[in-house]
Structure formats: C-alpha cells, structure tokens
Length: 500
Image (tube, rainbow, N blue to C red; front, side):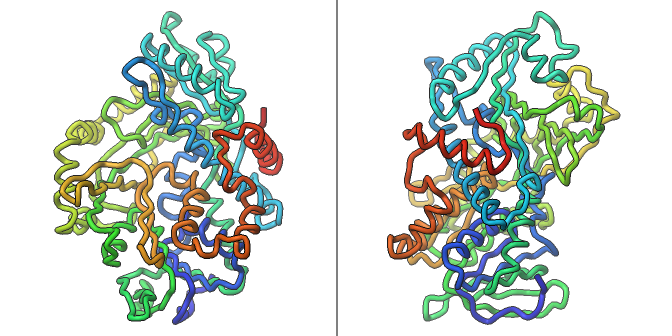
C-alpha cells in the first residue's frame, strides 16, 4: 500500500478508506477481478474515523436490542418493521464475511467478531409494559427465534450481574436477551479487507491523498483532483465510476460533483463521548450489549448502552454515548465544516429542519453542559455500584446526520439513517449519514451495484458469482423462514457465533 505516483486512469475511484469503501471494493473485485480500483484516503491509514473500533458502538446493529428501531404506536402496539429490515440487512454482512473466511481472505473471524448476547433493559411500569409488548411482537417472528424475556430480578442478575447489583428491589424492571448477537470491531475488519485488497492486481491504495475536486470530462468520465498532504504534489485521475464513502466528508464532495441528485442535501453534525472501563475484573463480569431507551428528543446515536467491546484482543466496557455538538464533520475535520457546507440549494431545507427540531437542539445543549457527575449519574442507572475512578472518557467519533430536501428543496427533513445518492447516468454514488451504516455495509454495497452496475447483474454477468458470495441475494429473509434459519446456522458456524 505504497503512496507512489497515482495512476492516471482507473475503472473506479473510491474516496475514503473506511468500512464502506473496503466492503464495496472487496465485492467488486470478487465479481470482476480485472477491475482497476484506486482508493484515496486523506489520513495516513484506513479506518481512522467512524470505522475505528472506539468510534462506533460495534453492536453488529442487528436490531436485536436497539429500541429506537421499534417505536410504540398510539394504541400501545409496537412496530417492528424497521427492526426486521435492519436485522436481515445484517445477515448480508454475515454472509459476505463468512464467504471471505471460507476462501481464506480472512484467516480467523475472531480477529474482528465475537459472540456477544444483545439485551434490552428497562425500568418503570410504562417501560416494562412497552418491552413486554415488544417481546411479544418480536419473538413471534422467525427472525427473532430464541429471544428471551424476563421480569425476574434473579434471572436478569444471572444475565447481567453488574446491572442488578445494588438495584432497588422494588423497582419494576424487564429485559430481553438474544444470544445470537455479536460484537464487531469494524476497525479491525476494515484493516483485514484492505490487507486482502492490497495483495490483488489492479488495486492501488493511497493514503495522505486528499480529493480537492471532482469534474465531469466531456467523455462522461470523472476527473478526480488529488493533493498529497505530505509532498504537496497534485495529481489527476480519470475514472469511469466514483464512490464517495468519506463519512462526514462525503457531503462536501457530493456538492463539488455538481450532480443534480445531490442538490439540497445538508448535514447536521453530532459528536459523542464514551465512558470506558478497561479494568479486567469488571469487564470479565459483564458479557452483553445492554441497550436502554433514549431520552425523549435525543438522536438515535445517543441511545444509552452498557456495551461489551473486544478490541485488539482486549475486553472493555463502554457506556454512552453522550451526545454533543461540534461544527466539525469529521474527528480530523475543520471547525468550519458546517458553515462551508451551506449552499443556496440547501439553505431552505436546513432552516426548515432547524425550525422543526428545537427539541433536538435543546437536548444537545443540555448534553454539552453536563458535568462529569451528571454523566456518571446516567451510568449509575445501568450500573448502580459503579466506581468512577475505574472509568475514563473516550471520544465516540463524529456523525453527520442527513438533512434531506423535500418539496423541490423548499423544505427538509432530518434523517438518522444512511442515504445513498447516485447519479442518473450511474457514474457516481455517495453515501451520507451514520448508523447503522457499518453493520449494513454489504446491503449498501449491493444497493450500489443495483443502482450503478445493473447492466452487470445478469445471468451472463455477475449474478451467479454474487449468489455464491451472498447465497440469499434476491430472497426476502423476513418472509422465507427456512432459508433464514439455514443461512444463520451456516454463517454462525463459520464466524464462530451462537445459533439457536
């Protein structure tokens, strides 16, 4: 992965060296080994922003425990449709990873993934009633086979002792657990994918390479202007297709491209902080990802959770994240990122979102003004006997929530998921947004293929190979129970995960 002179021509240029580019690049090279792909990254290594192990929750976002995916309806019932969608999207990632392990591209799945139960935990009568109804809906569906529910303090204490020790005995509580969950280190996975990519012909990975501009050539190709941040040399690459997977930096590049489909989009940055415990005797007693309910008006990335993490072979516990505000779009970005993202085309959508989201703004201000004692008080609700000296603060990364234009750019809506924007001529795609991006990287990569390489997804083209990589491609696992059970058993065996 040297930083030698850039090639002048490429089939594909990928901007950003995170999990998204790594996943899409891996899939494309498997389908078409002859492709020439150039990866460009501003920093000196891959996975240094949101893909880094400490910068994301690593839950495997299978929508087992995240209650923001299962809203309560006015009549008290629970809508699990979004959870089912995310749940089965994660299956696609598992299939891709299992394929790579099977062919030897990843030697040991334990280098990036570990079995870890996923749990939801609530207290208070209303929340217990909600979780009971949520469990009723989810456990009836084959995608959540094996989910357990309890209101028994002794049972819950066996599952998560730290959460129960010191808790008031008369407090109404409830928990769900599903043992088929996982902990994923997306930083480690990204490094493994790029290591495999760099060994293939036709792949160039260039770090310290900042993309300055994207311009259309008369031929329809893209001219990508690149600045080497170490030597200050400038180069230009001509590419048939460009993928912008630069996390918070994607919005600016999408705006520079000038494609009509990108007009009106804006971004709202949200920063975060974890509390982190690396004390072995504490982390050894907690093996689960325990999600609570988000405070009213908070963004989904702020759902509190007491989270087992295994990074570089070391087991730790994270709690948080505590939301905050920074005008940077990246951890390594500029304080001027937000102001510089404002364009005539997105002023109205951004103002519309600001007008309709005062509750979110108030929540972020309150989080920024929180003292350390307030932060630990929130942790104490999950871990009553916490000792503050055993915990330290850690950065939780930077997210840019999408402001999506509506009504011909006269209005806007704040989106908390990911958004794939692609050009009509199929020559460019850009990924905006945040969670659950990393966990659904394979699904997003498939969406790129369907939008921008549809002419190759034929029986005579890539389709047969794609079905070897993703055996359930084209099958709705939300509907096909037998295929869902079979593929989960297969991938669990390869990835060394639990299966029930």
